[in-house]
Length: 256
Image 1 (tube, rainbow, N blue to C red):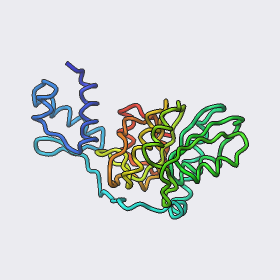
Image 2 (image 1 turned 180 degrees about the vertical axis):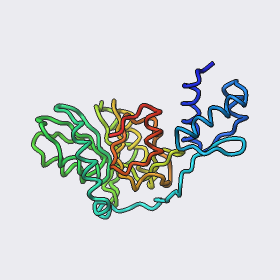
Image 3 (image 1 turned 90 degrees about the horizontal axis):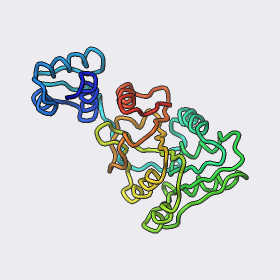
């Protein structure tokens, strides 16, 4: 049987992921009586952003925004510029000399290239032609990118041929720019045909970092791309929502 601490941690994680829980279901799942579960939920409500309800508990997630439509990269560069610069600087500090890093398509990951320091050799694997062109102008950087279909709005390559190309590599760190982040649905993306290549970048990376300004949280988009638990770290701005902070701490995800 789980200890009180471990059980309460598990229950909190369930509430964060599912939005709500029932006393009866939890009692059955953890093989304890309902009085014990009610005691657990009372403890969580006193120490976390959890609300008690008749027969269970829930988290007040606030209003969910919708970012279903794709935004052209040129317009993305103009949005939340200062936050993206802050996040890019933080990400760049994690990169070590001689590493192989992966960058998907997006304005925030593109800005990472502006803040590289103390680097004499770096391999960059990217899906994005704009990132590739910018990286190619840095003398110590070697750039690798797949072929396939080039999407004009994002500058990203996609297709089965590009997936096969990417799987040849071993990546130290992947920095994944995102369109929408949701506790229940994870990282979501507005373009179905781009998801497979983004997935491959995560699969081949030893360390996975999500880079996202606060406007992307509590949003949903067309399709799920990754679970939040997959990431080693969230690189975010100073408006990072508390509920995601709780989730990260519960799942040993570094907040940067």
